[in-house]
Image (cartoon, rainbow, N blue to C red):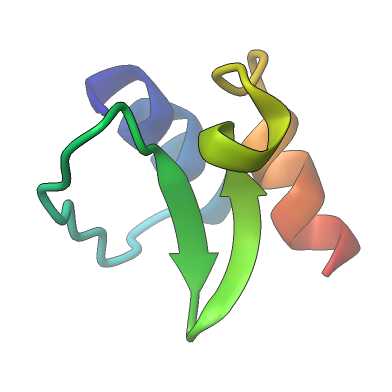
Length: 58
């Protein structure tokens, strides 16, 4: 999460981030209830700058 948090802060500045513990290898990124990235659906972690790009594409 630290790497992704740094990416997001670098692109969006002072934003509020929260990490929610889960089980089973699930890694998902949501913005205001909208699913932006799902490791469970794609079977992989996001590439560098992939999540900020997906957010901007909105």
